[in-house]
Length: 120
Image 1 (cartoon, rainbow, N blue to C red):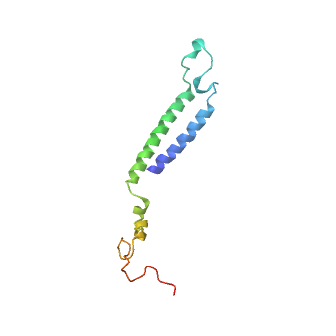
Image 2 (image 1 turned 180 degrees about the horizontal axis):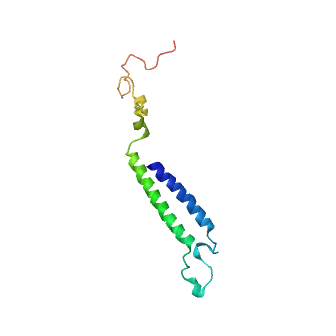
Image 3 (image 1 turned 90 degrees about the vertical axis):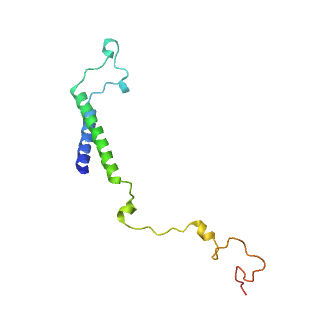
């Protein structure tokens, strides 16, 4: 289903490009310029103009359809979840700072064991 809509979307895009390029240039971009007086009103609808509108509307519809299909397929899962592989546990930097005994207080002067072995 998705592939069919995608192929139709591609053909609509190519058709829309071709129809827009075939239209006559009126000069003055964005409808500005092009004369004045009685001819400044709405231009006559040509066949290419109508085809452009139809292709543009169909292009927008297929774009929305592809977005909906992609959203339904996503379903809130990640790629790792789809593979079924559990990621290894990550060591946090705080774990490296805790001494092996779990004691966060510095050693007292009464302790006989040195923290760093001597080089003797």
